[in-house]
Image 1 (tube, rainbow, N blue to C red):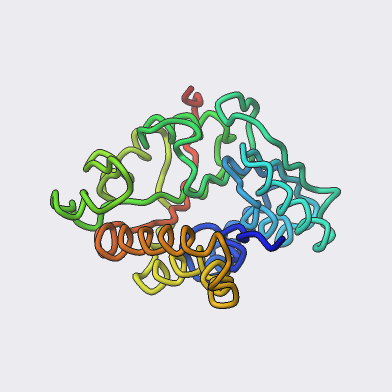
Image 2: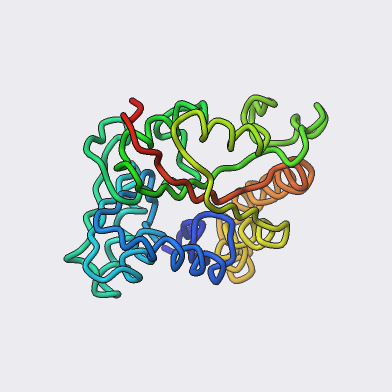
Length: 251
């Protein structure tokens, strides 16, 4: 029997950014020729795979707890001829050890700590001196009023995110220097939000009388309200390229 498809299958990336802009970030990071790359909370590892394609000979490790995402990443690695250069494994990011030339952590800071400063300190401990970190994080464009918080994800509070200057200050305190910064546009956010559910919306058009259609329609409608009446215009997303200062790593 036909079942509801997983969401996100229409997306190239599971984070808001235009793929062409990401390719420019990847090309910039590739200039330092990192040989060992770690992706914390890799999802289906699209950013990691693009990095490995941009740096011949580099090897990568990606960790995540979602097996379905890891399976998608392994399939993509095989299609791109990168299987021998990448390891995608189910693991708790808090158990990671060792140091890497380049660390990726995009939208996955909570795998290490709820507080951005503590997450950035943990990431510094995984990065070799002089190495790089690509850090993607949501932030408040403007602190939302109570009536917008009420519509966002369940139990949303002002403390769920921070202002962008506070992210940069936390990075400096954790032993990083800011090298580059990309704030996604509202149109990039909108494309991401629509892409998350595009395949499910198209499925509904073809299966309007399916037994699961009504429940899916309600979930998608609720999600759209949380987006457009909740965090739309208040929540931003930034991609920071950070350089690791010499000296002892933070734990």
